[in-house]
Image (cartoon, rainbow, N blue to C red; front, side, top):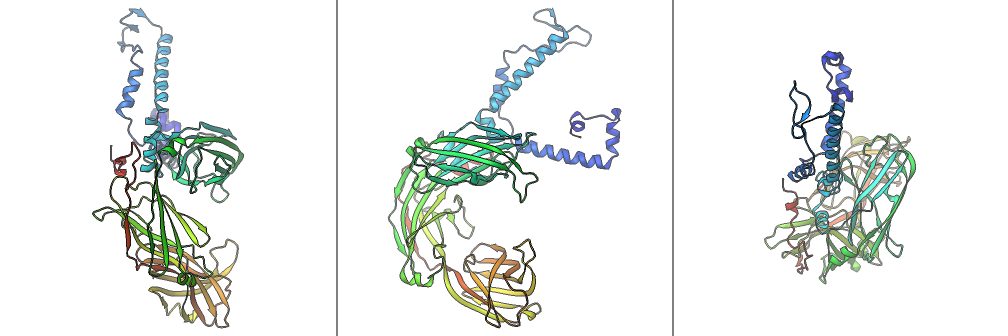
Length: 535
């Protein structure tokens, strides 16, 4: 069918007429054309530049081109007045074509062309950000020249960006037919180690494009190494949960990355501001680290004795901070875990390390121009799990017809149904209590712990399955919602109890001006919006 479309068979051949009246053929044609269009968009999303055209034409400047021959005249080259045989003419044409192809391939290997079709910097690559483009601007893209092949599958790595805060590499995998394979590899099979042999990164996928998969990680705090060693021992392509095919093989590789240039460009700005919230959360600001690809903010938190008692025995370290940076006019430059109304240049989830009674935080941003203008750090709110005892008693058989509402600490949950059914968390047969619910929360909800107590005092743990919309007020919509684990029959009476609340605190009034940082040469006036302007 692809051959028919490409050659545009005519009705004279008989194929065109048959296809026009064959519904199945028409469906196949539509499918193939859609596939070809998808590949075209993926591989060639942008127009070739004038520079590309100029270089191709320059490469052909010395190639003699025959004038078009008149229909009734012999094939000749006017300048040489010499008859040329059809064989020689075809050979010359083939040579010219080869020159064109060679020139195109040569230019394709250059970044200006390669970026569009196989790059972590391409516009259609979801991980491309201003920080990566800044790193490229400074010449920090490394090419390890990795190409390994087994069982017809080829793995290639041609682009890696690394500095003291992150590593990201573009991986291209193709099947035996040359088609891209993405999201089919467990990247935990690849390690990143410093010169002392310490593992400093946990690689995982970060989207990509139709042909490139981004593999990345934030680097551990305090990575001080002139080189990093990346080693992959990949023995499987495909996943048993969603892949059509699993291929066993050996795609092993190892390469070294140079950190010296990126480390030399890194700037550190110490911070010493402190603050304790009215409810006992202590913050200690530590430093800002400016690297070619972004900025890392480091701070620590701890609890006073009263706050510790409210979270005794709980995972108190599962705090969440919300803050933002604003300029002198009050415009939000970047926000973290806010209400979603301002921009954010946060890079992934914050890194959190518990040391004794402290939580050490690292927040990473692709853009934070404290080296260009005055910026202010503003603490907005935070959440932390605390003990609670909010409860509501009801008759399970009556909830379907008479919904009840749980109210506690500004949160409201409407229970509208209760039945025994298949536990959706298990594929095998397993029953559980299913409570339909919707709710609005001022508190965090994610770290909440709920139980159901029956008339005999037996308690059953509750899991939540549904959607939670984040914002100033969180909205939870569950279907089934609450899953009462281990419950096999509806109790006569039931009490829903929230034993742990992911408490939200916003009684805060603290901010400070960031000290002006030393700019990196070549990045003094960068603006991420400039990178995404329409050509």
